[in-house]
Length: 445
Picture 1: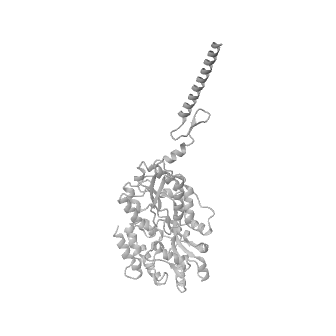
Picture 2: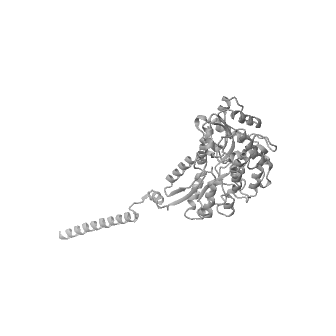
Picture 3: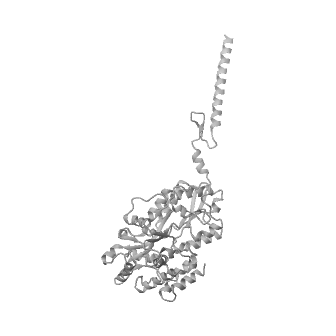
């Protein structure tokens, strides 16, 4: 009996020991599968484990990245509000990214000074939307921006012919376009109809409209003679057609001088506001938008700022050409701006992936169409749909143009063009001739 009890007791102890060993083995297995922060992996059934917190940990572990961006989408540019929203959306999707947005309006030309100063002081933007014209030659030639076709990860697919227009003289592409533009004569058709005046589809009708509106309380043409970017461009085009318009400044083309003198002639006819020499471009544009002026020289971006209540009464016409070397239908336009990536940012290991990702985001068809939709300009990818008739008419103007050429402002030394446009008041008051101004500007190059 005692031996039976001893045997039973030994069996019981063996069972207890076996249970303890099994329990310890299970605890070790759980411990081995636990990660450092207390989460555990689960078996997905195929022998592999799945860490449910991996993606969250990876996002949290990304180092903060700050990108400096400079564009001309600011001030009165209707695209500015859309661009701000796009930046916010990108930051929401990428919490580790922040932007220092130092965008400035292109109207006053201060953006050129800013970009030049930033690059010469080693404080350049990581990514910028800037003029791919003579303004960018220095930074391109000094290797301060990257060749987009050679940069790893850059997506240039889906572009129309505007991308090829960005190709530099060295054969490389340093800027990716956003939209194309046109400059033209904006007219308020309702004011023309109310005063029984024909639309200015020829030079003779343009001068007739000036004369007839000058006899009313409606200003014929909303103009700032000092802030006269578009006035200079169109009067030179009118005097010489596209052939002479394409001349080099060094040629001191007679049509350029004649165009400036024609501005003075029309000023004497009462074509412009009495304070044209002192108001700026924004004030002149407001005269047209307030229906105090019948005509306005502007770019396609101006559509975004025209009040809805008058937009349907606005038509865009090509500048009537009276000189030899062209015809009415010749246009000022093209694609003069694009997205650049600085070499400094691209070669910075902490920024490269982010700046490339943002570049592909901001130049995607979806984003380009949103920005183009705010201004009514022609997108470099895709096509705007359901356009109002007046916007569609502008796009048709470009499609039917007899010739299109980039603005003089984008083709010559910026200081030289500034001298030309700021000298217009001197031509108007008779203290200088158009030929003198062109000669002075040519000497600056």
